[in-house]
Image 1 (cartoon, rainbow, N blue to C red):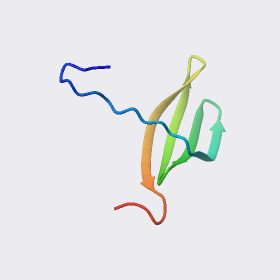
Image 2: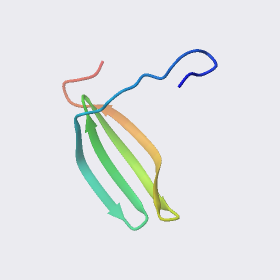
Image 3: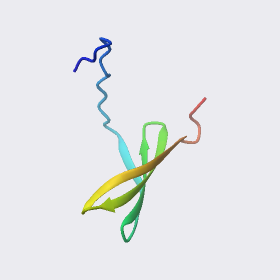
Length: 66
């Protein structure tokens, strides 16, 4: 896929994903996922039967980061 600027997005294949926590309460959910050295926390809401991400936070796992 080429954009007008000529810059192509990098292709990244994630092979190591660990779901640390999945919490569902009605039409809202929180999912915590560890990917490499990062911990992603996704907040989701169910809309017309489909889960959609409403926000995401990112932190480095202990021992990683700047």
